[in-house]
Image (cartoon, rainbow, N blue to C red; front, side, top):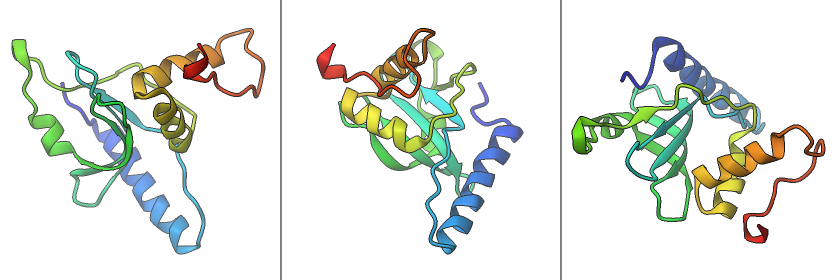
Length: 142
């Protein structure tokens, strides 16, 4: 699987450029994740919002499955080079879409202990019948 299509690469680069422009004006930039990468045999998950000029450094939320998701940079080349059993490799979630800012993903993932559990909580909160603008469920309270 090709992890970055030209369209995704463009969107990630555009976010990097926009972030630098916002920072130059002293403004905060908090876009939603553009892509979700995951290990199909494990818990490792990455949400990326930006791609640096070098074409390798992705910025976003990284969760290696140890209960402590972190914001930062990670290498596309290193993720692409991962070889898993049965000829598998890291994949891109083709159905992933989000309009929620990365900061909210990071907050929920830290509270929940993983991006995957945070995604479940966010989906539950967005279901029909959930109160509009209601806070996301606390994973510690069921």
